Length: 305
Image (cartoon, rainbow, N blue to C red):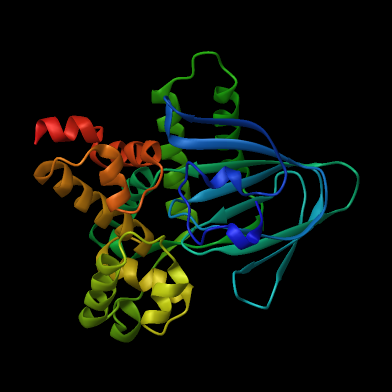
């Protein structure tokens, strides 16, 4: 897929369509409903590709190979350069599109494991770590780091992915352990004592919320909304989450699901038309997302209403 048609934002279910390289393994859904695990083989050098943002925490584990990598926030001219080898890790908070590239130091392909953890499990870890201040907590991006404890947990999930009958209880337990580790080691709190930095003013929040409602059917674009209030993508993403309790991309999804619920309750539109009304051209994707957010399918929700 070329950069010209890549979206600013995508779902956790679709994120593994975008990395440059050959996907050799993937598990999701069923016992893996709260975790998505993919393995890629990066056999050729790549100067640059753009990765759409997701809202959920993501970890990338370099399992083999050695390379120099470069990364930057989309639209930023400065590259961050890192030397990575087997057992190097990336921790990504998500929320903004970014550019990435690498140059291998040998003919050995880079084998990487990409793990996405559901926001609900990570939020549970934040609540345990920070209590009533959890809404002010944020995950910080780290690149090319060493963390043997985190790798041990990733190895457990990798091994479980190879079993014939994976255990959801085991997978969720390890995912929670990873989330607790991330919350302890890689998060921080916004300084709420500094009002000018701690959150968006209420009138700005309402401005953004009203704009999202007006453009509900359009694809979410973090840069476009950040420009509305005159902020960088990164700064706006953090301050909106602090003010509202969730990232702007998740709030946009919440608005869509809330409208879809109302349409299912109050109209006779079929599920496909409801999906189109709230901006989803793929009815199957809409149904999966609706079930993830509400615990039931659109048809079941309509019958229960």
